[in-house]
Every structure is written in structure tokens, then in C-alpha cells.
Image 1 (cartoon, rainbow, N blue to C red):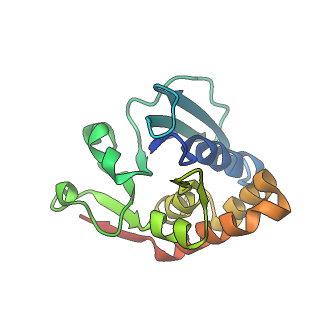
Image 2 (image 1 turned 90 degrees about the vertical axis):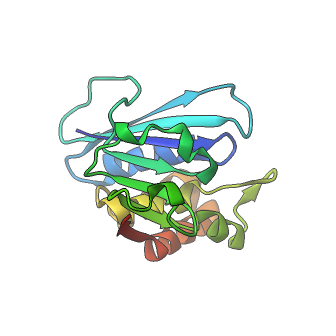
Image 3 (image 1 turned 30 degrees about the vertical axis):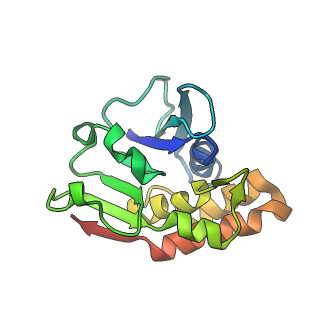
Length: 186
């Protein structure tokens, strides 16, 4: 089983992104099971929100938070210190919304993927009530960094979720992030 912990801020689309990522695996990746579980804190815009995604080649029977993740997906760089990176597999990837590798990860020997998801999303007008929606952008980065779900199947899941009218900007955000994500050993 592959387990992912995702940290975001309420209003940035993190929980929706986790659901779409799981759907991309269930609907379009042959033989892959997935689940997305949100964990809300104070349930207000701007508060930290966690979501957990699991992937497996057999039905997933547990429904609990992820305590030992294979990968971490950080949608807001200011939340990086809110995750215990020791709980993320040393062979896994830490995927971050950032223009560069954060100082506290340099020299760590960890596999880090980073992309300016905020910049991409803002350029495409993916802003709602003052919050930049980085969820689809970060899914493109996740797909690039992990190869669990293909970019083509992520695009299909985005279109399925958002519909033909609302999907184009979200698809473009995911594809741009997929192309622009840098994966390095820090």
C-alpha cells in the first residue's frame, strides 16, 4: 500500500484535490484501488487541513489517518514545519509548493519535488474569495514526482469532476505543473 499525507490551508482546495487524485486511480488506473480521507481542524478558511490518500492493488480496508506516509504533499510552504518529516519514508518524495528547495531540506538527502503552484494558479486565474486554488496544480506535481497515476488519467479525472466548462483551467494548471516540477535530491 502507498500512503500519502497532504497538508493545505482551508480554502485552497486540498480536500477536493485528494478526492480527485483518488478518483484518478480508481476510475482510470487499471487494477488500482484508492481512498481519500479528509481531517479538518477548526474548519475555517486559512486553517490547516490534512487529507490522506491511499493506493493499493487490492481493496483498502482501513479508514484512519496516515501515520507513516510514503509521500508528503505540501500545498502551502508555510505549513512545512507542521509535518514530521521523519514520518515520511526516506525513499518517498516530499512535494512542495515552492519556487525553490526550502533551506531546512537542503542537505537532507531527501527526494524533493517543487513547483511554483501558487504562481501557475494565479496566472490562470484560479483564485476564489481571495484564496489561490493550488490543488489541481499540485496534483500535476504529485503525478510527475511519483508516477502512481499518469498525467492522462489525472486529466480525465479532473474533467470528470469539474465538467467540460470548468475543467480547462484546472487541466492546464495540472499539465503546467507536471512540466515545470523539478525533482531533486536535496
